[in-house]
Image (tube, rainbow, N blue to C red; front, top):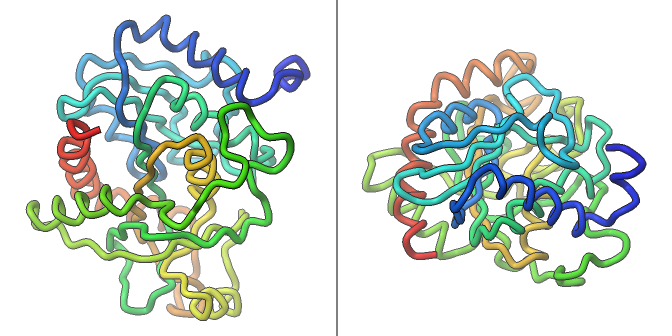
Length: 283
């Protein structure tokens, strides 16, 4: 982000970016926004009448530099629902300030979305869960030491947003019903967001167990906090790619994360597509 970008607040930058995107997507009015994390980016290929814009061409956009995050905005129809998807996200551990990393969520809100779907690859903390499981996120723990709302309040934000239903109960119900109808096994639990980029130690995993976490990752939480402050409803699913440190003797690696997301990607994409098809018309 240049010094000129930083001179304007995130609300102004988001509106400017959204206006530039509207010039390229035409009359599309997205109802749903999707943040496609590791292994789910190929869902962007399922969009019909799609406009695809590399992040490098987007105004004020934070760069993405993690394997599995292609860095493309896709706008079009998903299961007949007007939607816009982000193939990849900026992470706080890359050095982005929380305000900058969550700017894309503000842009999606400025484009008019009513609901935000978030996805991620995560480690299993709950010992009853297994690598390859999909977990509907019911709540989160913000253990990143950062909050994207810190600082001057952005016009249109709620200063003290209520997070008691951060992951919308009605939207979660639809995802559960979709999974049941499609025969897709689905867990549900609490996602703990840590800063990263190092994986957790066995002692930290034991701590997370005691705090009530079911899965752990390095994203998603700032996006949901930002969306809720703006008034956008949220729901999300984690792909559990590995056991947390100390639960299994196997060492952790990003290669294994990508391998697992590729293996279960088919049913992950099927679940999300069907859920969006059910949720979109009701928004």
